[in-house]
Image (cartoon, rainbow, N blue to C red; front, side, top):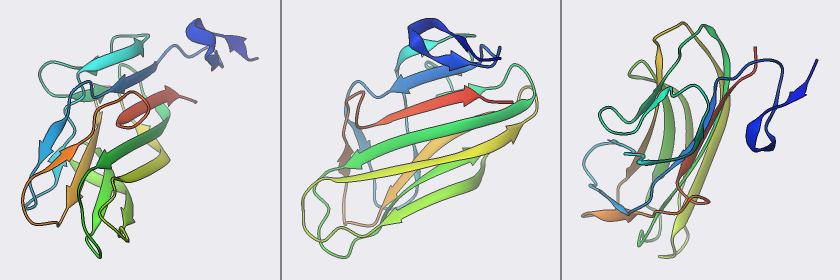
Length: 151
């Protein structure tokens, strides 16, 4: 039976859900993937997202979780590779890649379902291969991660 949760979020009796975003630009180097340092929660029903120390969602209970995330890196030129990845316990489980066609900001969205045991965690990582440091743009609608337990 579906019930209405807070903020108008539908649930099947599960309260594990959060929506976090980046409130200030984050500098992303071209040498290695970087973890997105989310710092603001729109909501975090069970206080499972660590915004201050590890920048990750830690499941309080085992279950199937739906993850949806977006990111945007500015000033990347032609044929550069940009990707966003969902990591579970330090391992990449979903990846979205894009090669921009001009130097406009590039948005990358990714989603998927992942099974988590209690205390396992989810992170968002991004990468680009444009020479130098590029800004990961901040905005609740641009660089975000939503996680909802669905089973």
